[in-house]
Image (cartoon, rainbow, N blue to C red):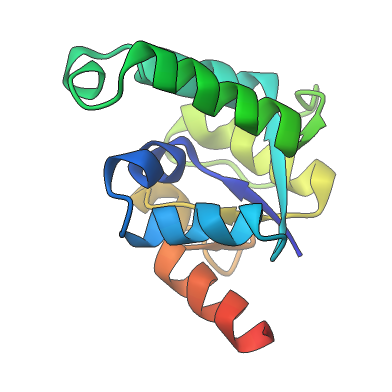
Length: 137
């Protein structure tokens, strides 16, 4: 199984080490699924991790280490040059849809715009993704 973790899931993982996003990240590290990434996704994550409210909870060195772990461990894809087949109400999410389409992957997100497209694109919440992983083991 392949998955693109939305930035909100990637940010939540180190913030709450016992939360569902952290459990999803641990499942990836344990080899339960293949993480799909792109430079655009990592750039978005890197920008978000510099926001003052996140900086208070995630040290800059930890943020750099986390991004490098993702860059090295994820299967990195070129940012798709094409528009996705389905557009999000939030156009900033369209690159995630295109990335998931090009990698034939599921999107794991907490974003209501993306989750609202369930049925049109393969997208699930972190809770549902984790439950699916647990049924596969």
